[in-house]
Amino acid sequence: MNESVDKILEECITKGSRKSFFLFAGAGSGKTHSLVVLLNKIRDKWGQKFKIENRHVAVITYTNAATDEIISRLNYSPLFHVSTIHSFVWNVIQSYQSDIKKYYLRFKEEEKAELEEKINKARKNDGKTYLNNVDKFDKVIKSIAKIETVYKFIYNPNGNNFEYNALSHAEVIKIGAKMIVENKLLQKIIAQQYPFLLIDESQDTKKELVQAFFELERNFGGENFTLGFIGDQK
Image (cartoon, rainbow, N blue to C red):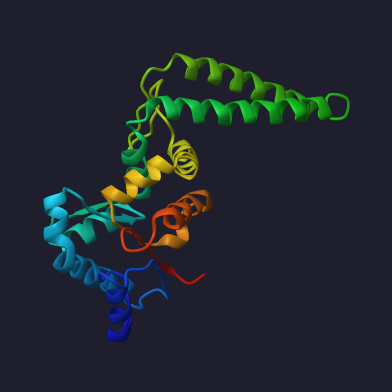
């Protein structure tokens, strides 16, 4: 990256000219350096205000190693909430347990309906496919019954999540994305809590989550909320 790119990015986070942005370039081009430069400029321009308001700058990375590197390069400043995408989404949704259950059950009911259709189609034509779908259907029925009994869902972004009431990594993303897209109040809460939301290695972010962030930006982007995507060209 060069100084002209850094200057353009600075305009995107400056009061009066704030706007969301994409920054895509090849590997080794200095994107992480530009991201850190930008984050330090956000700290200089907005840090004191956000500290008084108890708000933070969200930085989403792809791995725990990348998270640790950025935290270190930002000198462990408490202004920044740096985390992996799974940790960030869980942090956003974990307080809304009834909504998590509602969306989880909705997805399972949709899966159940799809399997019923497959079973009916395969009943007379393909015995093996029919039996496989029946087995999947039975598992979905048991899963729905289990979900109904869960009072509080848990999730560990760094674990295997084998507990009875634990969500998988994929389930957190799927449920979280849907909750953000369909809940404008949740979008508002995210925008207020994280007036800057920057996503590193964004080319690896799940499509449904990207769409959720786009919806958040569409409704709240501008002088009060800035969304930034940083990633490799693919």
